[in-house]
Amino acid sequence: MNETPTASRRFPVAWLVLLLVLVVAAAGGWLGWKQWTSYRAQQQNQSDETLQRWQNMDQLLSALRRDQRAASERVQDTAATNRILRDEMLALSQRGALLEETVTRLSDPNRHGAQALRLDEVELLLNQGQQRLSIAGDLDGARRAYALAAGVLQGIDDPSYLNLRQTLIQERNALDAAGRGAQSELASALDAFATQLKALPERIADDSAADRPWWQQALSPLVEIRPSRGGALVSASDRVGAQDALQIEVSLARAALERNDEAGYRQALTRIDTWMTRLWPDSPPLRQRRAELSSLAGKPLRPKIPELGTTLLQLQAMRERRTEQ
Image (cartoon, rainbow, N blue to C red; front, side):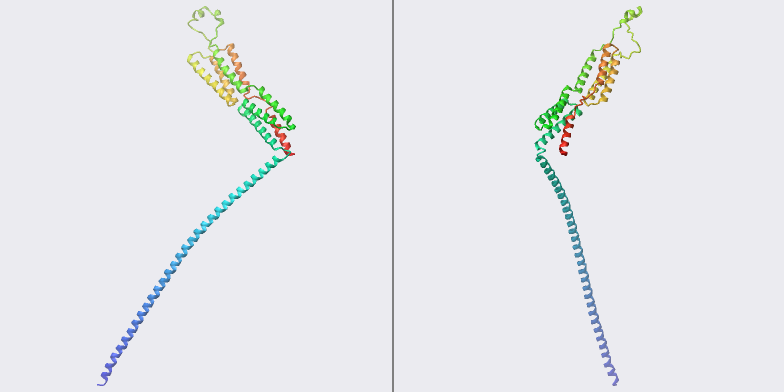
């Protein structure tokens, strides 16, 4: 009877111990889970902070790259500006050297600055006169340019230019002797020739009419007999077209004469001669006009003046010798 209460008392104690162990285990689990959750939250915060730092570092690197590119562009712009400024400084130094050289030449007592300027003007006027004559055939313009050059040369009191003045006088005399110029004379002669063509006879009286047989003399008022081998045009329509073609060739000859086209001018005159033989029968006036046309074709389009340019060459040679001294 004594064993049963002892056993019953032990039984609640075991349950109490078991309950206590369970409570302790639950508390430990809860504390562990809480600690693990805190650790995970801390790790997550650290990851977020690290990610935020990386993002900030990336933004900072992007900003640094933009600043670097902007700085590089500014450096390139500065280098380009420096190159431009350096080129401008070199150009200014070269201009300064040229101005200094020009001033030195003008202040040279052996060169005489005013005289050098006058000689430059004379050379320019002689060049202009020669070009107006050789390129455009403008004799009047060439004479005016040479007259201006002679006036400027008269203002130079250096006796060493006496021969140059004499050469210029000879060249001006040669220009005056050329008259109106070959081009103007040929144009006037061509106009007169075209006017004289209208007076050519279209028909020639047959002196041998009295020697014809009686039947030809009887039919002559009704029928006109012409040789079949003649080249002159007879019908009115053909003659009108040929007259127009002749006038066109005369205009072409005038145009070629104006532009100094010697080949085109002579070809136009050759075609004019062909149309003349088609329009008018052979006669002394026609042969005279054809001889005049051949004379027009043989004349030069530009005046040949051997003295042209001698003054300019002599002036350039004198200035080169003075420069070498």
